[in-house]
Length: 169
Image 1 (tube, one colour):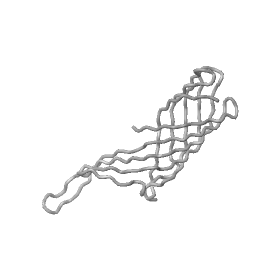
Image 2 (cartoon, one colour):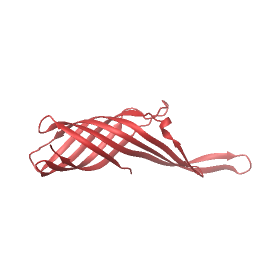
Image 3 (cartoon, one colour):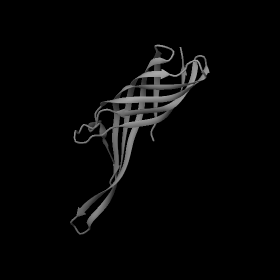
């Protein structure tokens, strides 16, 4: 479980259709546990060492989404948005423990920039004529591998619940 935060601006072409631009900070990661078998010829033989690793990424994400709102005149409206998302890896670290705590800079192994497809599904509740409460689900999935190693394909998939207050100018 990780958190993120965003600032969003929407330009409406019509009452129901618009273009949404967002600037989102996203903390992502992956935790794994595995055993590494090592042979010690000095007499202790084969031993398993438990390795715990935690990969942490901080991204600046910029989605540009086409959005549609079902009915802007009613109290409740369904909102859907889809489009490309551009990601910039700001920071990455791999923390691991193989008997002692260690960490390395992970940005040397992962691409700084990658490209996603983003989707939002939300419900909007009109509080006043120019103010609404919106909550829904956000999904994004990489279209290219984040790994610099061509033999190791790795893709981010993020989903989450978001809630926000929108003010219409």
